[in-house]
Amino acid sequence: MARPRRPLTPEATRLLDAAAEFHADLAAVVRQRDELAQRALTAGATWREVGAAIGMSPQAAHKRFHGGARDA
Image (tube, rainbow, N blue to C red; front, side, top):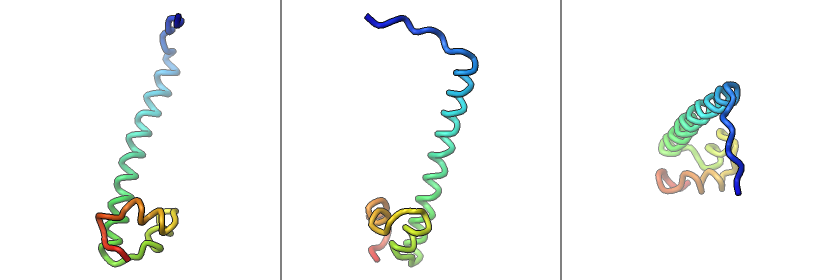
């Protein structure tokens, strides 16, 4: 039988709210990064160049962005 859950402290609530806000901000930054990578590919960048710019291998960049941009 599960123990009854105690209410969150104000500090825990504040920290969870901050974490949720950070997560939403992070998701927006990732979407922006992905859009810029797609645009760079469309403008002629190679998978190697895109990968280097965003901190991943060319193979990982291809796997993530393949389909929306050209194959180089």
